[in-house]
Length: 272
Ligand SMILES: [Zn+2]
Image 1 (cartoon, helix red, strand yellow):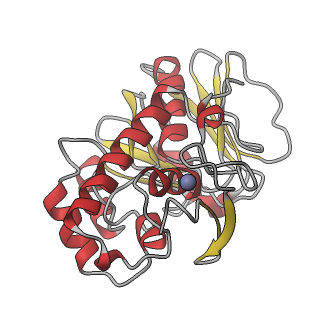
Image 2: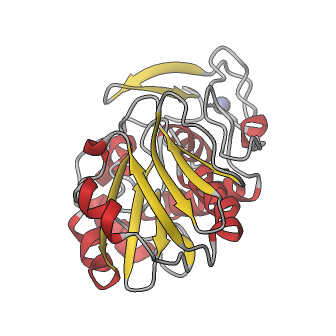
């Protein structure tokens, strides 16, 4: 599943390609993925110009000026850009054509991805309704609020972080890396973390996601971004996918366990 670094990599790829393009035709081959209505979307996008492509958490935001098109890739969603529109392949569900003959294609084998079309003015309320936490950067992801959020929850820390409520952007890969870095066991109750541990966890989240962005995301299983570029973050993963390998910090074999139904990688010696 693409997490914040992978979505940011897609954004950086798409933004220069799409900025200033005017939409001439929209073909939606799998209507249920457009939650605000496929027919309305296909109609309303005509003639609109893409101003920019932005990101919030794991959402891509196509900025159209007065409106935005929000995309969540979920498990397997991908965008492809074609200089010249080509015949759609299987699993390609949305085709957005531009006046210059180029085409943006949304492909999704599992069909879990979503599109929403809304007035830009409603964007903040939309993310609020999704209880989307702050971006994982120094200026917005504040220690005091994070500590309070952890303190109020008896949930195990890993599933709590995956909810996106305390901080946006983590998925199953990066959360395992972050907890290893902060030496916290994924099943530990969030409210049991000391102030010092909460500080270490926040630091690990900021640093790990920033490194993921700098490395162009990770290329795990089928997830490659729209431009055939493979990120390199997977080369530096310390615990994710490393079961049986020695912990880079203490040498104890990394174990794979289940936490909240998710495969979870942990060093049982470093993460008590
Ligand atoms: Zn270890």
